[in-house]
Image (cartoon, helix red, strand yellow):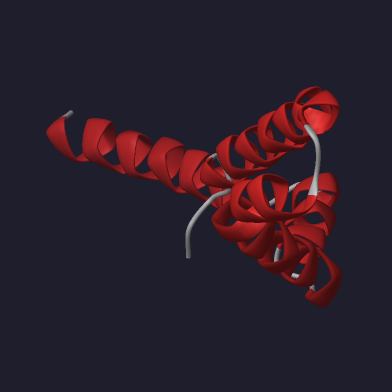
Length: 89
């Protein structure tokens, strides 16, 4: 009886683990996009903007443009938050 129970449990675990190893196609595509050159370049530009955008605002613009710069800062914050959710390898 013990041997049958162990063999049955082993078969069930093998099936469950083999199904867990299969990655859906949409996840593979999403991972390719997230690790791609275009998104990396975009995030680099957003990072430079986040670092120096406020300085540019203070040096080169008038007070009326503060709302636009605030909106761009919010977009940068959202992009960084979304990037944090990206699965790590």
